[in-house]
Length: 191
Image (cartoon, rainbow, N blue to C red; front, side, top):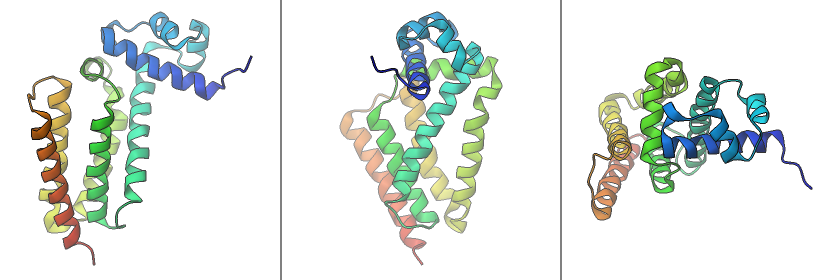
C-alpha cells in the first residue's frame, strides 16, 4: 500500500473542509466531519490543524495560494508592466470563475466565520493591499483599472450571495467588456 505524503493529506483536509463548509457552512463545520470527508483520522487532522480556527485559516490561505499561483501563471502570458498585470489579473479572475472551485455556501460561511475570527482576513487584506499598489503603477489610469477589478469583486460576491441573476451570455458579455477595457489600458502602458 502506498502512503500519501503529509502534503497530500493536508491538501485533502483543506479540500474536505471546503466541501463540508459548502454543505453545512463554516459555522457548523466540525473537525470530525472534515476528517471523515478527507479520509483521515481526527488525530491526523489535528496533526496538520490543531483547532477549527487554524483549519479555517488554512483554508483561506490555501485559497489565496491557489489564486496567487493562477495570477503568476497568467502574468507569464502578458507583458511585464502594470498594464500586463491588469490583464493577467482579469485572466486569472475569469479562469477562477469558470473553475468554480467551491459553491456559494462555502464563500458565505467563510465570510461569516471571518466576523468571529477577523484574522482569517489577514491574508486577503495583504493581497488586496499589494494588488491596489500594483494598479497604482498605472498612474492616471489607476481609477479605471481599479473599477475593472472591483467589477470582478461584484461578480464574485453576486455569485457568492446568489444575488446576481445573469444569463450565461450576459455574464460572458460583462467579462469580455472587462477584458477589453484591461487590454486598452495595457496598450496605453506598453512603452
